[in-house]
Figure (tube, rainbow, N blue to C red):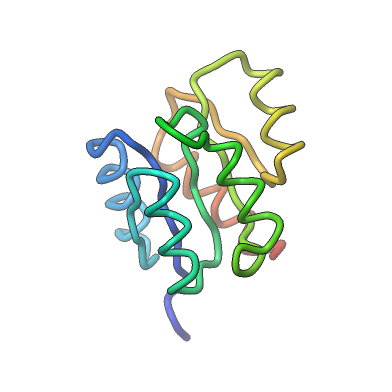
Length: 123
């Protein structure tokens, strides 16, 4: 069975590495993008089962990335949005943008893995 693949989008490289490491340990294939442009380019060249997108990115926001991935750029990719902001506003905005789940910092790698696995079961 091929590895499930995850696109991680976060402008904080240390967080991107932590998330990638946690998911790789459990057998996921992970690619890491630092911004919207890089993420959308990667989404066009590879197939991902799930995207993990930081809500607060420089340039186009995580919400814009979610909108484009949910709309099918180039195909629909279920996403979980990571946020540090007001929980209810962030969750509502993420859902409206097309995200399937929101997780709030601080969180554990195990919490992220649980959410990613849940999205893969549904997708």
